[in-house]
Image (cartoon, rainbow, N blue to C red; front, side):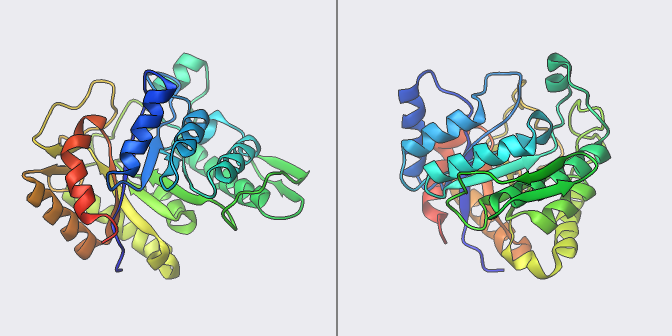
Length: 304
């Protein structure tokens, strides 16, 4: 695949509307393509829909999205209408990230049941069917195990047709196979424990990372060339302790593109290697603390 680089940054909060708009405009002017917001019920993070809309209104080119909406927090009929509205108001710049929901603390604090991973992946697969059905023209009906939709047609429709770009993130094989069938962008992560307490201690390292790429390649078959494959950069330049609020675990990822240590030239060379050798072209900066160091790299490689 000959894919141009695309760079995104996760931005979690700001002290005011003006400060949030300034962050979005700085990203737009610094080689970044996408501003992504997370979706958790706990911690210092903005709510995604309002944050995306505000960032879109403050910019003209920057795409806005989520890494990622937790499917368990919203019925897909609600999310379909919210997402279509954001896509319309942003003139087609929505990058809709979806996941099952997984962090135990979110569920426990809100009194939600955290069901087994297989149930959550099956429910997400149905939710994607509902989303795409409601974004299409005409009434939509769907009777699944988890959702039942009867003759529902929603407005507005998304500006981007047939639907906004879908980003799916995951590390387990079932989630990666679903992403290979449905996503426009896939963010390769570490598999998480079934109880939602963090990354699976058995996952990690170069071999496991390359195996995830292979799962996607095999499952995507004829649509592989249409998928943007990527991952989140968790360590940049000089290794620092993982932030206590973050679920990221970079301790075993030194040989993967999630850890990019060295000089600016070292980092650029590593990104080119992963793009040219393993097809990864969509890189997400996990920490705002790394923006200053990464911006020159993004400016050098953006769109190339």
